[in-house]
Length: 427
Image (tube, rainbow, N blue to C red; front, top):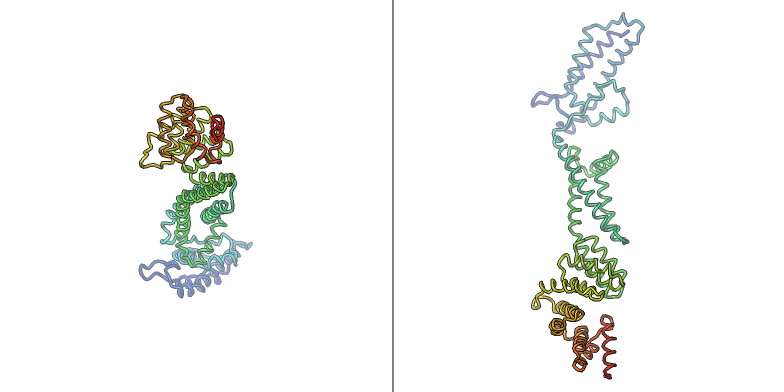
């Protein structure tokens, strides 16, 4: 049976313990531990521990009575039941204080009270400073979504083709940072890890949501800046590819131009240079595609190279169309004379192939005017004169062709000029 005297004494101790819990002096309501000083929180430890153990004792006395074979003879009165209910009600008025006590969770782990002992499991009150956590958490998820999208795009660009050490690092490092930030917001283990980091930096608990948003937002801004810098990084690859090409390292140069284009797809100069290499590697179809992508961006030198490729392949009509479009946008006085030379030379060549000699002559004369020390225009003009039956007049042009020829770029014209001069008996 329940010992009524012992129960009555425990209830009296319970009432005394409750009365010793602090009340907020401002509004006579219960405070939370966050509203108390460190000294006040420390002073609460024996009071809260005492009240929890007294409530355990009361429950033990009640449980011992319920197990008695003589339940009907229990001496507990209705007054004692009513007194317990009123005291529990008074205790619950302090639930914010008890539930927010920092050591409560540690005590639960140590004593492992049953879940039926509700006084050990009071719901922790929401900190008013956390009232906007739903907003910070939502913004954190949005920032992480943006981070993942940017990391995916950046990684795919750097890992296209055969990645090197720096490109692999540039692809992996943002991914690791994003996974860290994502784990801190989306997984239990990640949250525990990032919370330990925040604790080590003395970040207040009620600021953790804002801190996580700051980490995710900072990472998002960093990734956006890095993504915006991709064209500048592509320029570095482009310059390196140009240097490698000049050193005759075609394969390495091609890799650098392709990397530049993967980082910055709207890079006409890189398409143009890639097309040159593909021509050098006897890949005319790939070169044509690269030149087309360059000229789609309005890069005039690509018109010239693609038209030259068409002339060599016998597609003269397409070459003439491209050259006319390029020259329509070309200003001899403002644009590069070397480019003007190439455009007029190729248009003269195309007209020569079409047997439209007056137009060929006019364009070749313009080319010679812009590039007096370039061989191809002289060679083509020599051919034009021979087609008109002026072989004697053509000799001077064949001589100039041979004198100005570059063995690396004008080989077919060198052979033709040598043959013509040998035929005419000129040494």
